[in-house]
Image (tube, rainbow, N blue to C red):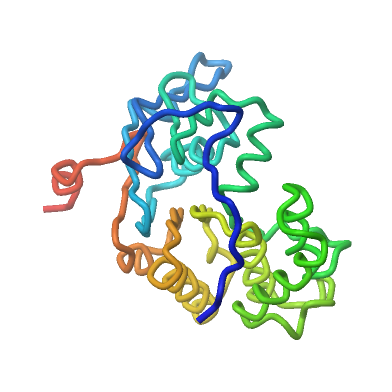
Length: 254
């Protein structure tokens, strides 16, 4: 089994600390955007709690609020109302600079379009988050990046540029990058959306291993119903609200 290098895991930042029984705790979240037609409410009264070690899929139609919800959890965007508490830190109160450092140490993000830097080799892309957050010693960073690439079966591609490897291999490298600082939380936004079904299944299997063997917590936005049905918990968003089981039953065709 892959052996993680140890490091200090302090979830708080700048002394901010809010007690919560959950790893992720969203409290009455609302997000409004100003439009020419007036305010548009993208999220409405969202309450969401996620425990350590959960594998959660977020599903819903385009425009339902999935990406906005993920942006709240990752701190990429901030709520208009409510609290976003992750690892006992109210991340909605952090400055942009502190948020970037906190995110780099506590959360790994996997994007649909990989977002590897094209001028860096694969292994250099994996080392980048460690450099940014000053994690591990300079000598350890390369070794750790190679370990992660071994884990995702990409070691032989380590010194190639992203453009020289396939889309599936780029996504594997993106997962390795998300794990660079050994974060407890992985957030994946349509991670299999640009992959064929075989490669998508392999990527999903990697996520399962991270949850069930490495105790990671994963939130995955997906349009793939089959994959969503294989996780431990599925959330359906519609018009900015998380649907209850009763609402889902009512929405089913007779």
